[in-house]
Amino acid sequence: MIKSMTAYSEASHNENSIQCNVEIRSYNSKNLDIALYLPRAFNRYEDAIKKLIAAKLSRGRIEIRVVIEDQSDDCAMFQVDIPRALSYYKALLQLKEQLNSQFPLDSGFSTDSGITIQQILEGKDMIKPAEKSQDNDILIWETIVKSVDSALNNLEAMRKNEGENLSKDLLDRLNYIETGLLKVEEEASLMPAIYRDRLMDRIKFLIGTSKDKVNTDNITDKKIEDFEHLIDPVRLAQEVAILADKSDISEEIVRARSHISLFRDIIKSDEAGGRKLNFLIQEFNREFNTMGSKSGKAELSHIVVDLKSELEKIREQIQNIE
View 1 (cartoon, rainbow, N blue to C red):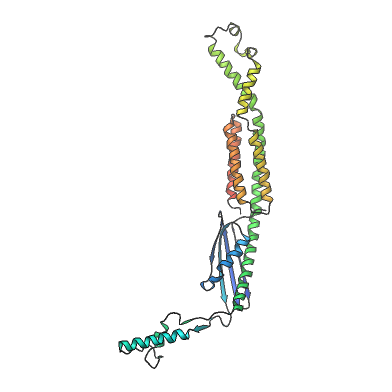
View 2 (view 1 turned 45 degrees about the vertical axis):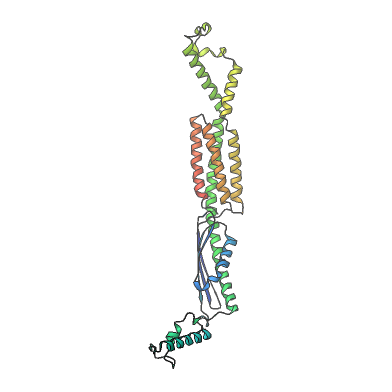
């Protein structure tokens, strides 16, 4: 069953004070294009989340937003880099001695030397968030996995539902084309007789315009309409056969029917068939273009144009199939 590439879903999961909310939107795209929006503090999970998506989706522009809230007691804990702070403090003392001047006391909370805590904190990374335990990392990842999986399942359900609607529309249009091919075949079967009549009309015209210039006593004694017995029937049949062969579209009709059968098989298949269907539409177009170029009858040309118009509608729908 084919699936649409356009869908939306959301899901959330809470696991031991870890809350994860996921929102996914998918759009048409030739390839799988993932745009992941993740809080900076959790960037370490980015590649793993993209692998989860790639395991379930093969095509489409996927925009996924993941919001993670750590509500545990240690979520706001920080740690001080004591060795770094002491080294920075010593550097400030050395600078003070070199300049032989008193540092201003910007804060009431300062060291005995007159160097303030604010000055020490100006050093980079003196205080930073405490590293979480490995167990907490595992808990966060499990929560993310459950939320993303749930959102992907909801997305998949919507894509399948949209795919069913697309399938019905495509099959209806395919049935229309198949019926049109019967009309094309019926009109094509009349072409040899039409070519014979055209050839006879041409011969009548040539005889009528040349009888005054050529010594054809046996023709002048007869009406132009009764001249058929003077024409070699074998030669006439050969000429008609040549014309009919040049305009024969039986092979194109057979191939078009084969494409219709394959089209239906792809729609029923469990595999993603968007690329195959797109290629198949190109093959359809080649057959119809050839039919149109070989057509020697206005009614036949009109049918082919109508079928090509229906084929274009199918092509537009296929752009939305995974």
